Image 1 (cartoon, rainbow, N blue to C red):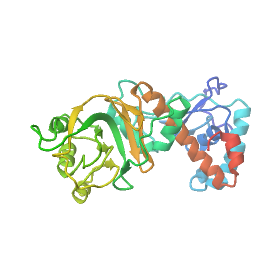
Image 2 (image 1 turned 90 degrees about the horizontal axis):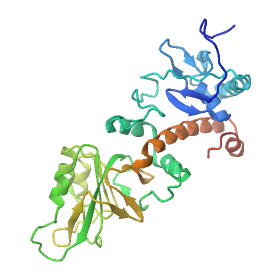
Image 3 (image 1 turned 45 degrees about the horizontal axis):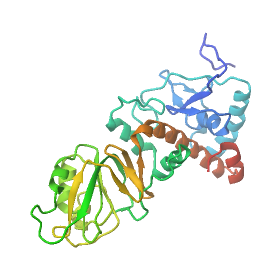
Length: 327
């Protein structure tokens, strides 16, 4: 019995694309996307789950092993028969909880940073972003491994506000240099990213955290040390650094400039670059490739979910890599 909508044709797929829970996934004749259409179906406004115009079996949810075996056969047969349709109708709300209008392939220059960052926080993580940057030829975008979150659960997403620190010796005519100017310049979603000097003192602390948080900043990344650790942590605001060190900066360091290009561990950081940080590291995404990186990273993250389910269902890693091209 046909499950297609009356009067609706099933055209052969030319671009071979489908919607996976509202995400555009390239169907490069890979099992990952064919099966993903079942494992993560998007719902049409009529409430029907679609992959090639048929509803998803009700028993499949929560039974990944049985579902995977069934869907592998069904999806491959449908694909081979040319029954895969291009689904252009992408729902504004869907089961992943991703905000409507920022689905992969729908990012534009007009997409607000708030919605863009919500997509990243809910879907992506630094390893998959790094993988995509590698494929695009950006091989050196992670900050040094020593830069770590104060707590494992801390994550950071926002725009770089680069800060250049310089060494100082003794009492200064203007203590801390331009630090207060830099703090007062923070806008919503800005990340205070500081580097420079010989790292003989702390470059972040309690009052700086309070100032940046109140101004809507997204976090701080210090290529150096922080202090006031308990009082920073109690503010529940993400800070990444090389570690703790109580020694004060007043007579040892100053902010020389801010909102300027900087470099940390050979990684160039421009004002406004996308910064993403989590337990695995901090990565810098150049603005000129930001949309492409996000789109491809969402697709890869979706594919990784499918590969994991396949392996948990009994597929070997060799077979999985051969079929999916993802490891």
